[in-house]
Structure formats: C-alpha cells, structure tokens
Image 1 (spheres, one colour):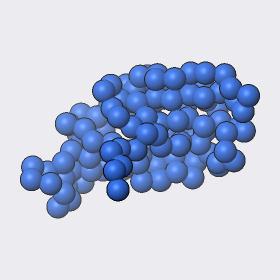
Image 2: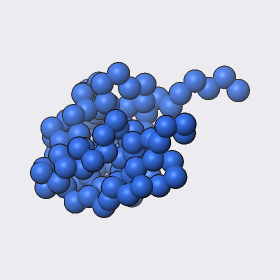
Image 3: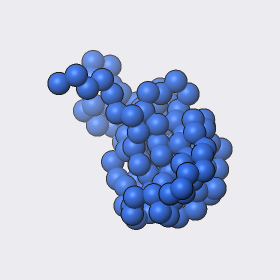
Image 4: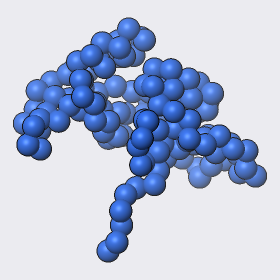
Length: 124
C-alpha cells in the first residue's frame, strides 16, 4: 500500500452558506474550493495548512444526509480555550474531559454532524 493521506472528508449539510459561515467564522477554517459543478456547488474548507479538507456537501452531491457524520477528530493545541470560543459563539460543548490519550470535547455543527476537539497527551 502506498496511501499517504486522506484527501477529503464529506460533511453533509442542508445549507452550504450556513455551514460555510460556521466552519470559517467559528472554527477558523479557510475555503480551499468553491466551484459550481453540474452536480451542484463543490465547497471545501480546511484548517490552515491541513492535508485533509472537508467537503461541505449539499443536496445533489452524493445522496448524503445532513447530520449523520460522526467522529471527526480535530486536534488542537488548547482544547479548553477552543471550547470557550465555541461556547461564546453559542455552540453547545460536552467536556472537555481528561482521557488516557489527551483532553477531549465534543460538539456539533449547525446540521448536527458530530465533531470532537483533542489536545493530545504527550507521548500519544
């Protein structure tokens, strides 16, 4: 096998503009692609410098259901500060909690897709 990384993760959303505001304004992601295609709008965002991007998939782009994505782990250097920023933006946050592999919290985007924040424990 010669796989080097994941290209993108599909995040199904009901309203791409609302999702774009959340991922850029609240999470601080950058737009990496915003194109009109015959199937619909191809919209991708990512944290600065990331190899893997998030495709905010709207209607007509693969038959995905908004809110069904779970388990997207976002690594951060300061989970507590990021949780405070999310709460200040009106986002419900569970945690953060100390776990053997680090300090972790969970939250949802406006469509209900589940994301997690993790500050990794040294040595993991």
